[in-house]
Length: 288
Image (cartoon, rainbow, N blue to C red; front, side, top):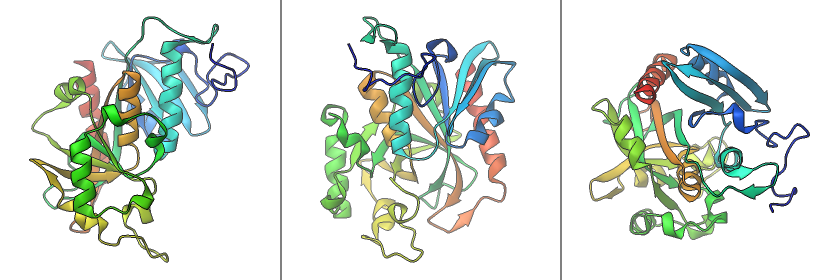
């Protein structure tokens, strides 16, 4: 039995941070970072059956063209993904009354819809990027046993190419769900490695008043290639989603609307339009 100190439940029986019960979620789930973006997606739904918010975790579940879908805000960063995916998995794969893992496990489909900056000059603002791989520059996932799910050869090539300082922890690379990749792929989508940083400023190479450990890291990432696979963009959640999803048996995919191009210094004239276009693209694919 899982101890109450390990799987914390609220007095009403819901999981601690998300404040959800099993009946509140669908098997197809869309992640967004910003809680205000939840309703930008569910405005397209035919109906909304459930709505709830605790802290930055806002959840709405309803139907889009007959498909039951949950939309959830995760907040920013790998640490919040650790909370979100573990508690979602508990909702479907642990009996919350007996505190025992279920014999028959459920695989969720989790699609992140986010905004990101492109690292390549030929991936323009207002385009879409699918992360075929998530590159973790943080250390969160190293708390788990991940060696068997990592792209070890690609990791070593990245470490060598960037002359990575191992005092920051070992980067990890994990692939997306092939099932969801095939479902969402099209000629509208750029593909590559989505880098996941543990912060927004220094960890992504931004300098305000503090010097950073490797001022050349972004340019090193720009030209990293492993075969025909290259870096596409940089954000703060994808690798954590891919890693926890793969460890727990869920299908995960990260889609990003490119609102900035770090290579040429441009920013979208209308980032909200780009995000809305990606939302409608993703909903259409989920409903197929």
